[in-house]
Length: 354
Image (cartoon, rainbow, N blue to C red; front, side, top):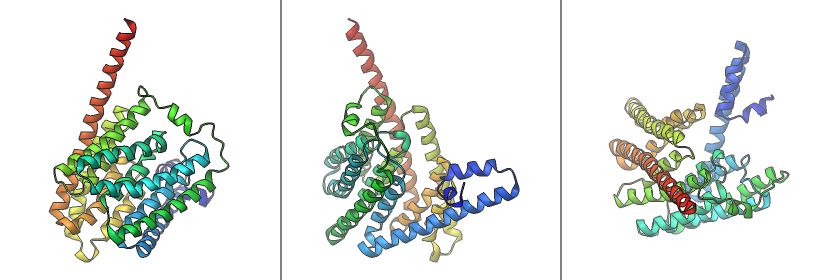
């Protein structure tokens, strides 16, 4: 494996190489490559988001984050269907992420929920057909980030331009990287494979319904940063219940641990470098292969931003409450939904038997 190829590995792949190292020299080499990868990735991310902030305004730096996520994911991940159709779907996804979160913020929580359900239905049914590729962690996360950091007026006009540029870049990179691949399925197949009795479709429906409902409830309760609850719910909803239980536990424990670590750093470090705690969290995520540790370090960046608006006490309280509410509600929703579907299936079987 070349140096460049090793740089392309994810955290789990790099750590697997470290475990298989037979000599100290080999292990030190893999550690060095791993650290270089994290530094290069962090530098590129910082540069990329900074460029978007300069071009489209600081209030649209989140656009740079969303576009960066899409570029980094879809340069390798596909949608499982014909490349040309997938490219058009990606362009449609960018339109949805640009327009729908902004419109939903203009409506009441209930009407906004209905619009969010419709928007997520398109993103998830056509963009997250394979749950194990975790495309929802890009598309739904991007949607929720744009929802949570909405802008108006001139800033929204700049957001339109930024998302248009992001769509062009993502579609170009996606098509270039996937154009030579052969796919046996197309858009029509995705529609035909929708089956309410399959675990995949049940998972998709839970994502489509539960995440907007969580947002709506948080907003009706006047909780700031409602997107945190939505992101937590999205992250916890998986096709298999045992995996969901694992995610819920790790998300709750990881966020509490992250809050404690952030609070310690907040009191130990001088106020002039508070903003760099978020960067420290990004490095920690880069070093983490397991979901629990990622939950810990993801908390740093969120709190570093929220503390400026709500103070330490308010930000910490919101973070814990929103995340616990999001994952617990998601788990309860899916348990009830799967139970209802199993009862419906039993009744259908009984009717057919009669």
